[in-house]
Image (cartoon, rainbow over all chains, first blue to last red; front, top):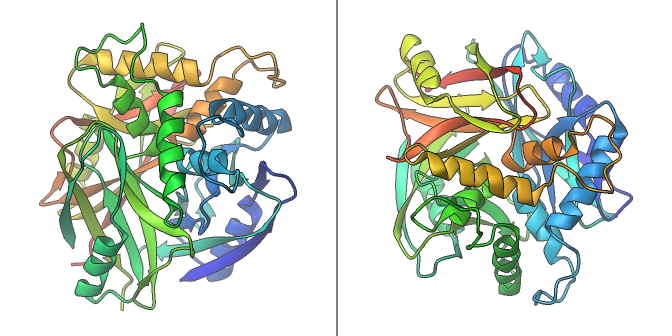
Length: 135
Length: 135
Length: 135
C-alpha cells in the first residue's frame, strides 16, 4: 500500500517530527508486522531517524550540517543557490525503513522519524509504503 | 528476482545516471507494484538519488564531497590512497530503495538514481532486487 | 522474523564487524533468497557497509568522520556533549539492507557489515528483520 503525507516546513533547514503520522498510517492499515518504507520525492530534503527528546540535538545537528555543507562556497556553479541543500539531501538520504512488530513501529526509546528540510520553507510530500509480512 | 547492471565510470569521482536501466529492469519484469532494492557491492562507491536536471548540481555535489572528505589528509594510514573514497561511500550509502506503483518508479519530478563513483575509473556492478507486492 | 543481536563496544567511536552474526541469523532461518533489513535502535550509532580487509580503512574513516563532525564545537547547545555522535549517526544512517541469494548474503569481496558506534563504550542492540521471497 502506498500512502502519502504532506509536510509544511517553515525554515530553510528544519527537522519535522513525522513519527506520529507514520504510526497512524501503520495503525490505520492494521499492519501487525512487516516493514514501513519511507521515501522523499524531493532533491533538497531527506528523511532521518534521530533523537526526539532534547530539541537542542536537532538544532545542533542543523548547525553541524551547515558547517559540513556551507550554503555559500566559491566553487558552486548551480544558479539556484541551493547546492548545499542537494549535498545534505544525499548525505542524510531520501529513504528510510522502519520495522513493525506486534502492530508497533520498532523504534528505540529516544528515536523519532524526521523529515529533513534543507531548502524550505516549502510544502513537501513523504511517501509511505507498507510491506506487511505474509500471513 | 536479482538482476545486475554494469556501470563503466570515467573519472575518479562521478555520478552516473542509472535511472533508465533501473526502469528497464522493472518494466522487463512486468512488476506492477512493490519495491526496487539497489545495492552496490563495492567499498569505494555508493548509490544516491538527486537532481537530474542541471548538471552543475552534480559537479557542485562532487566538489562539496571533496571538501567534506579530502583526498589527502596527513592522518590517513591506508596505503591505497583512497580513504576519502571509503568515507564518501559510507556517507552516501551502499543501498537505496525505490517504490514502484502502477508499473512505474515513484520518483519526484527532478529525481534521478545515481551510481556514485568515488575511486574510478572502474568497471562496477549494481545489484537490483525486485520485491513485487503479493498478488 | 525479527531477531536482535547485542554489540558491546569498547571505544567512543568504533566500527564493529557484525557480518558473521548477520550471516548466522540468515543461515539459522534457512532463508534462501530475500532481504535482510538491519536497524539500529539508538540515536548515537549507525550501521554501514565498508571494507573488511585493511583495518587502517576503518581507523581512517573514524578519523575522517571526527573531522567532519568534531566532538567539540562552540555552537553546540546539547548538554550531553555528544552532538557530534548524533550528527554522525544521521550521516551514516540507522538502517541498512542486504540482499540474500542462494542462501548467502550478496556482498562484494571486500565488504563487511559494521555496527558504527559514535558514543561508546556501551552495550548496543542491532535489530535484524528477514524478508524471505515468497515460495
